[in-house]
Length: 364
Image (tube, rainbow, N blue to C red):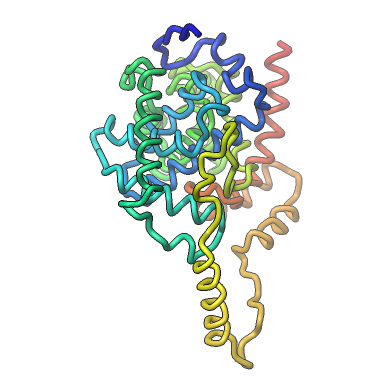
């Protein structure tokens, strides 16, 4: 089998974007999107736990998105690619971290996410055990494969919108709150393949557009403000829609690999001793915390997701009125877990409006 040549493009050509290797291997495009999203979430969470700067997570997520236009999910699962990309990106951005720290964090995340038990997550990986050696071999192997498939041109294919958004916000006389929220939208956009479909300038403008809509800030329209940065309206709306739809996506706890063999079969079930410890801790906690004076079930708070969803449904269908309501009392955005905050309502209304406008643009 002859390997395909490796072109060096910040934005991939249409021929590469039209059909990914995973699609050619029979993976549904929607399933591929979920696995890409899952891998990027792992990178973001692990980067925070390792106290790495955001630029490392951004580079790692970009590498993951590009890698899956060279290799299929049938060959490399998202979990192993995620920790390999983070380890490589830390070296690229001159913030190297120890391989045992990366594996230790991802191992704890793996146990917590797959089994969803607190006692299981607390057990550290044995640095002298077979599991650590296996994971270390995986990391080195996948890291080498990423470098080969990207032609070792790591620096020339990673351009982040972050460096543009602050400059653009300053040119538009935007507030620091506008720039900060736009920065958050850019971080969230890395969970998609926008970084290989559009230029960084377009993504930065889309983030400013979404932040201005959320905060109810009017931007110049005659002439359009985005034309100052050589961005077309169709591109702006297309990127904005992709970012907006992210907030309808539920948090992914765990996705099983699509590879032929399950690479995590050796760690496929928690130890019996851990199950027994879990049960004993539950009994002890119940005896200590529950008393006749305490209610068995606490009343749901206003920030409870169930109460929040009911509040969102009770809002009127008027987009402008809903935007004013949310802008007046906007909560802090949960950028790490993409929880369904009040942002979701603005996203719903914005999506409806922009889909209609996008259809008009396409027809014209």
